Image (cartoon, rainbow, N blue to C red; front, side, top):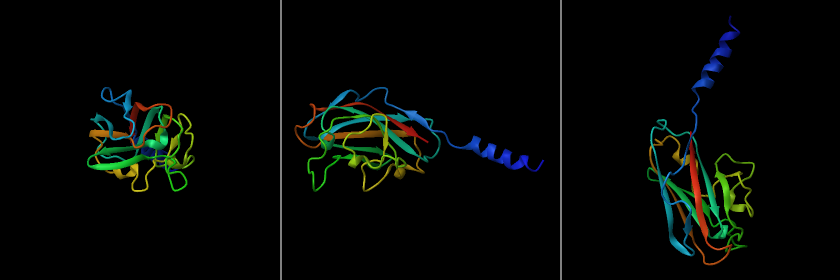
Length: 178
């Protein structure tokens, strides 16, 4: 009987692991143009209720069309914590304007997405792929150990005029909270 005990212990632990839940706004600022060269930007808020008592992982999926990726700044906030998601992708000393490629088609921002690296260096994001958030001063892990219930707000601003294929539009976004 002893060989069966370790197996049962593993089975019990596996059944007790936390499971993620997917949340997306049912109303609010969706399919909304992000005003060109306007740091006031737009925001969309969703309310999470009935979640587990503490967070162990947060991932954000964004769907943005048009515009120039290098113009966009975005952050996620909850419970007084603000985490940058995009910070003018591709901008730097060699390219102060960032990448002129357009859109983030169902891109997931995930701290553990090491295969594709940080979104800041991605010229053409692959639809449906996962990247690390464009943040040097924080990560989605900053939400860990907090209660997931309450309002979550995503903010987008277009920080430069022109570029891209017209203005950017926030098509949709969602949270995967474990």
